[in-house]
Amino acid sequence: MCSRVYIVYLLLLIIIQIAIDDVDGDCSLSLLEDFSQPSPVFLKDGRTLAPNSDGAFLFRRSDTLLVACPGDRRHILLDNKTSGYSELEAHCIINDTFRVERWIGKFKSIKCNTQPWFTTEDTQDRCYGNHILYRVGYKLRNKFITLYQACFDDAVMATLYVTHELNPANKHLQPGQRPNFVEGNLFGKVRMSELYKVKKQAERLNNVLGANMSNIYLSKKQFLSRGHLAPRADFLLRAEQQASFHYVNTAPQWMLGNAGDWAALEEALRRRIQKLGRPVTVYTGTHKVMTLADTRGRMKPIYLDEDVNNNGVVPVPLYFYKVNI
Image (cartoon, rainbow, N blue to C red; front, side, top):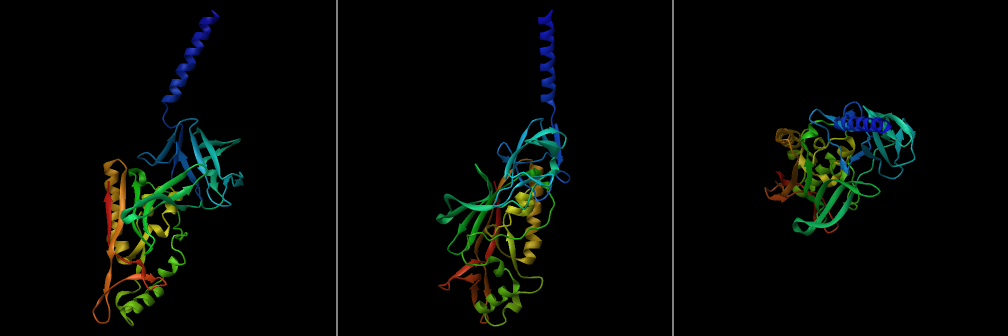
């Protein structure tokens, strides 16, 4: 009799477990409501998070997420109290409730004390023209989370192309303010933030083209802006978006083109990938150097700066392109 009861009890446990395993999404998170700022880097099975077609993140009970706030003096906050750690595991319990070690609370109560720090790293591989291939992302304790790669010509301080993955789920974006660009250590003593000031551009054009020639090419609406190569809107979470704001991910681009046709092309590509329904690899690059006429009508190549040998650096591209694979 006891053995029969035990068998029935065991079968009930198995049935209950199967029922639990069949439930899809014991935890459900909304991108707009359940992710706080400063947003940590979130990984599941070693990959950044991706929502379903409705913009929701679904996890099974006891699924584990790695929560990370990489960078010096960065750490994870739980209910605005420091955990003392830069990396922890969060376990799904139910709905938007997660467990982190002994703490149990709402997922939106998990955040960083300040913005995570992203960085560049030499991949030790070489790209077109035997130039340096950098990866840009977040350096965790045991791995580097690459968000995009950049083929960089350090002789002229120009990015030839950037490659990143565009996911159809990226129509859902975590909102937030636009951060400042980061220079890092790829540009030596060149202050990239200074080169993009209109006053500095005017001085440069006048030096190259002749006195007052900047008045012909520059105005309040038309100047050389930081042209994103892998755009912010191609990345889902705030920590991923923030990493796109590195100067290695830019090239000088006329403002009217940046905010006009180029922005329209980026948006059209996102819509096409959403219809395609699968991720693609996007190569965004630059080609040749733009020339402008000087006071005598001679065409001069335009660079935003020059090195100690008077060679131009940070070229203004003639063309921008995108290739999708």
